[in-house]
Image 1 (cartoon, rainbow, N blue to C red):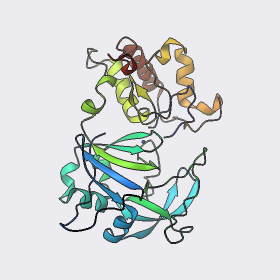
Image 2: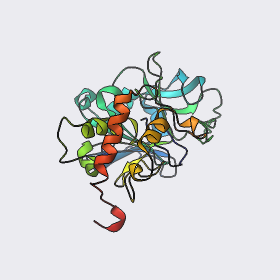
Image 3: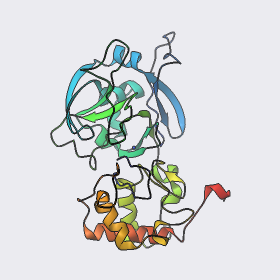
Image 4: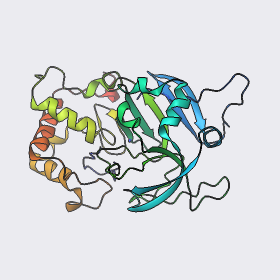
Length: 290
C-alpha cells in the first residue's frame, strides 16, 4: 500500500526474479525506448517485456475488476499473470510456487509476494485502461490520493475475494518482477539473535507482510515512506501507543495515502512495536558505510 511520505508507518503491506520474455533466436528485442517490465532471478537480470511484445504474445483481454485504489469498478486491457510468468520463464511456472517474489514500482514501492499467491487464478497484468486507451496511448486515469500515473503496468485481481490490498498485491507503476530469497535481499531487517518464539520475530512477520513495501529498516525495503530504524528508530521518537494508533488508522492523525489496518489485532500491534524495539539495537546504516 502506498503512503504519503510523512513520518507515518505504511503497512500494507510494492527483490530478485526477473521475469523474462523468452525470445526465439533472431526475434526482435523489445523497443529500447518503450517502458518495459524488467525481470531478474536471484540478482541476475534475465530479460524485459514491453507493451507491444505483451500484446503480441499473451492473448490480451478486457478485465473488469473491483479496484481498491480507484474505489469503483474499472476495465483494463490485460494479460493473465500466469501467462506472463510462463512467457517469462519458458517453463512450468508452478515450480516457482515456493519462491519469494518482489514487485518493484518506479516510485520506490517494493511489495514482497509469495509465488503461490501470484500463481492463483484471477491475477492480471494491466497495460491500458480499456475505456480510455487510444492507439498507443494507454489512457491511464490518475490513481490513488496522490493522483499519479499508474503506468506502465498495474497488477490487478478480478476475483470477488481478491480486492483486499492487505492480502493481494496491487502494485501500480510496476517496472520489475524479481525472485530472490527474502533473507538475501533484505538481510538487515531480521531481528537476528532474538529468541525464535519472541514477539520480535512475530512483529518481523507483520512488518514483512504489512510495512516493507513502503518502508525500510536499515536501508532495506521500500522508499516511499521513511526508514523506520535509521538514523533513529521510530520507537526512539514516538510513543508506542501513538505508533499503534497511527498504524491502525492514520487518517485520525492526518490525511495520507497510508491505509488503515483495522485487521491487525492489539497483540499484532504490540508485536510490531516489539520488533521495532529489537531493531533499534541492531542498526546498520548504509550511509555510514558499515
